[in-house]
Image 1 (tube, rainbow, N blue to C red):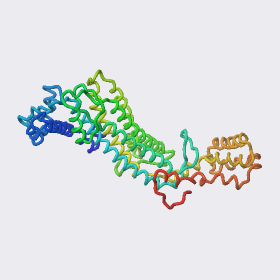
Image 2 (image 1 turned 60 degrees about the vertical axis):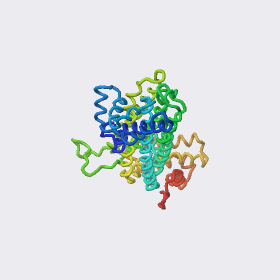
Image 3 (image 1 turned 60 degrees about the horizontal axis):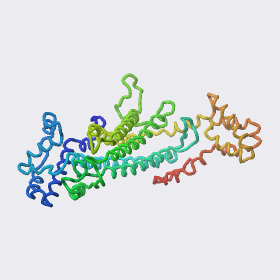
Image 4 (image 1 turned 90 degrees about the vertical axis):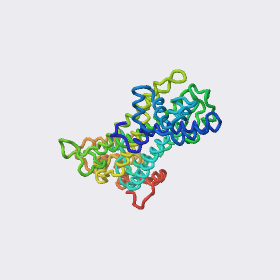
Length: 444
């Protein structure tokens, strides 16, 4: 992944040095377990443990490029130079994929731990945001059109619940890839028995694949990257909502705008939701990478390398992108500008239309048929829609001007329909379900 979208932690984890050092640990563990069972000299295993190290990453690349055209062989040559005579027992009984696939599982597991930590930080941010705005009244929207009142706290609680499910998804995905294999070139343990695999995987904190070919089966990686794409989809969903509500005509939310930041080279007034747009764009990359991982499932026989080039991009790419996206989105949410005054004004711009359902039910309860009540409310609402300078109580006035409505319901009963409180009566219950602490402020 390009540096622009990579955090320092992920850059270090997916570095070539980390990769080669993980390969080396697997090589050392293989030597040690074989020495315990008398397959190689114990002194050789001790020598490998004491002396083997990754001396020069660049030289490994140079040997691969100019000589071996094989990264594991180049790695073994460079490491072997640090060991001396005992180097002949490096990679004893192992196949390249034993080392590469098992090391990849180690790194993916650690990468997932980094992702979960970021999700937990976002959880705390969302919980605090929901609590702070439990009583912040705003319009709910469906199809982009105002529907009924709710609070911003409820909207955030929905995001929080989804992120909690994402944490569970990441935990399951971690289990799927936390698996190693040391089963040889075609998965039959011809050169090292299963006890060697069990020893190595246990010390790497990996489970053992029940059965494998030359490689771990790529359904694991397809599932893993699919789960990451789902998490990215949640971030895109939140980012898209913020972008929508930051539009000039609405301006109920706004992502942070730092001192000295510029929004346009030509228009000094611009404050654009660039981070949210970036997150939405990068979510597309996660979905594309997940599709690429699915294409990797079908390999010829016990293995070909059509998957290898893809995985060098998508595994590090997706984990790095998602880590970056989580961190950026958490910063947006932690510094989010919320404009309750605009929320209230926008709610009132419809002239009371958002209360149409309560009016409908009240008319039915006062004796009108559902069809008659619906037609009466819809007719009054249409007149309000068509009036460009509608008053905040335009719907109420239109209804009272309808003789059938005026005959069916009292003014006081009709006025009660335009009170937002009943729409918000269960805010605290909703927030409590996702563990949001309830403050003492009254819900409007």
